[in-house]
Length: 93
Image (cartoon, rainbow, N blue to C red):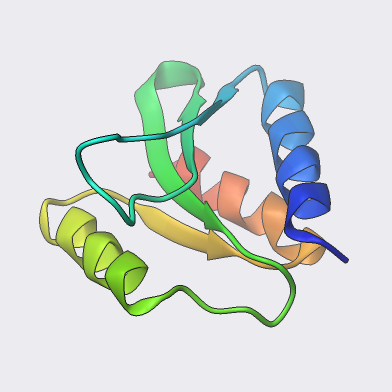
């Protein structure tokens, strides 16, 4: 399975929860997560999308750690089965 299939499913699942799953591109900072997930009642997280079995590159790991140190939720999703659990965690935060 390809990364874009997982990403499309994540976007759809987020919309089903009345949320937004925005593509995040930062021209001034490389390595940022792929998606901003915005759910009702102010719940927010970053999500890095990967193909099954793939892992974030070192620069992406540094950005993920940087965002987590600032207190943000950051997830890496490489499997369709993770989507519901990630969204549940974001909604409960």
